[in-house]
View 1 (cartoon, rainbow, N blue to C red):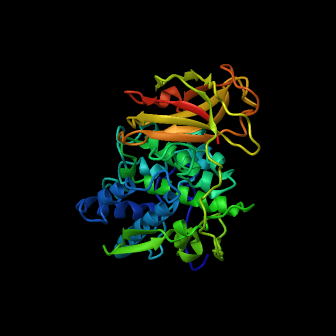
View 2: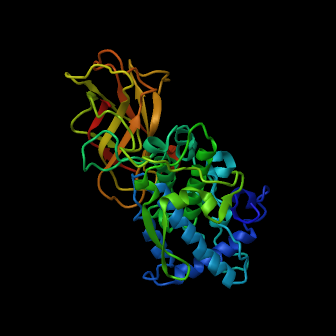
View 3: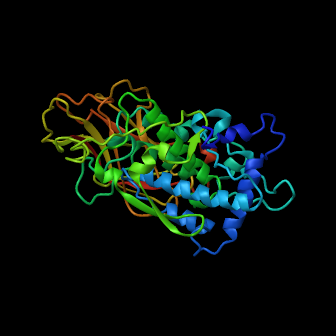
Length: 430
């Protein structure tokens, strides 16, 4: 890694005894953030412009992770240029917030909760209670229901699953559901930071961890690889560099970190391309599902209001449920979900019932739904529950109950409490 800028774990810079919140890299970052915050919003290298840029990400698609990597890479270049101009190291690298390790690592790094810099000036990294969740400023760690990347890292393929794929069951034009890593922990952590998470100076460290987890997933091997289709590898996105000029990268370029100038502490640096294009690799759809074969069960047509208490919905068996087919998958689809994005708007989705395997008293957790920032229309979530339910035989009205459990403990919730609504809930075989 000698020729690369190494992005360090933010926990390495946090003193074990809590004697000081500050490390040199945080001082450099705080000053650079202050410079960016002072720039006019129309300046593409300003803090406001960079936050707005993230809100324009291609959510719910297999382009999300490479887009995020590009945006973060140019953001890091903007910060590094400011650091170097201020006399700091020319190889400054953005730390990542490794909250997925749990425990103390899931607490907000102390430098972000300090009101002042070491010299007494206001700290640009600080966000007051309300702008950031107060319990984070107070030192409480993020709960595991929000930070876990286990479900995403278990995914055997990039698409569908880990990186997202718009070709999941549903009607054309429906909102695309997020990939597993986008859903958790990207969306879940964002949903608890505050009402405008992209404006929080800790947010880029959160994005760096998402980017790192992509590399962790690839390093698990066992067939894990980025897409080989030209529709993905050749897709171009444009960003403003540190000098304000527009520059472009392709998903194929950034999908292999060997093409970029950084690596992550604790993750083996790439040495060669992880994706080899072969003749015909761009042919055909991303996945071969064989189409959607029909509904097994549906929920109450009136939907369900979500809040700080657990809510449940019993599913009714479809009268025309299709017969089981070899190799068929089973999906839980949550349609027309809407939330205001009040901090803490995260719910675990669990299943219980006669056909649910290995469920405890609270049911089997299949994923999370999260709403971060201002309301932005309807969302759609799709969970592959093939390994959780018995999809064979006839379904009846005792087969399944879907429940939505607040992911944050009661003491962590703000007022007014988070609220959302889910519309149709459907179990489909596809």
